[in-house]
Image (cartoon, rainbow, N blue to C red; front, side):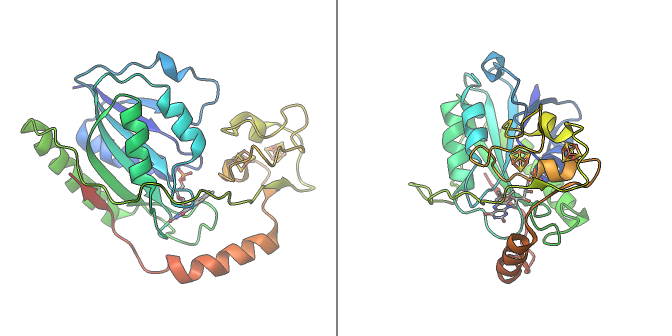
Length: 253
Ligand SMILES: Cc1cc2nc3c(=O)[nH]c(=O)nc-3n(C[C@H](O)[C@H](O)[C@H](O)COP(=O)(O)O)c2cc1C
Ligand code: SF4
Ligand code: SF4
């Protein structure tokens, strides 16, 4: 069975968790990068007998809107889908149900869902080092359970936690800005998933288009893109209360 790994992972945490699950399901998979603004996703037509792991981060308990838009262009025609939401140890709220709706819209038959934890991409001290060995063991066990369900020919739709209508989506409002160390190399503009940074003048950023994904901060070779420190301190204080207790990965079959 052909396996697709369809992933929106601006800073790599979602991909780390999805890689573990996909490797445990099958060593060979085709990677589809939903952060690539230049790709024509309507050209992707997974075969009916294919399986796809569809992985997104949780942003404010929702799927990033751009990931929904890009996913909805895929024409799956009945391929099986395993949903995966990856969150920073706070909560994922309506992310999985929204992802279920988007995947079904794209023509996938949803047969399973996983919630996993990765480092918080805004405040990396929360869930630091995750997914870790404990997560890996859990995700590998989930892969066995998923495989067993598929081997039985069981195509039942899992009961997935979350509410419809989804919670209101709010922007994180954190737009990283260049510091004096910026050398205008353009790496951040090239890698921004929504082209919010001006390629000709990377000091300019379209704050309305920015989804606060933090990729530009991560990829800058000069450590020259930062979020306002006052805002960062406020977010750290808010997350400290809700992110500290370790949350486990979850499987819905
Ligand atoms: C804009 C934004 C909003 C986020 N909202 C949440 C959230 O509501 N709950 C949570 O636990 N983590 C939240 N996170 C953390 C991410 O879900 C988590 O770090 C994820 O692994 C990031 O994926 P990536 O590394 O593939 O970019 C948020 C991160 C960003 C950038
Ligand atoms: S990657 Fe860094 S140095 Fe290069 S343009 Fe962007 S902020 Fe400036
Ligand atoms: S400008 Fe905004 S959307 Fe673009 S990479 Fe940076 S944080 Fe992400």
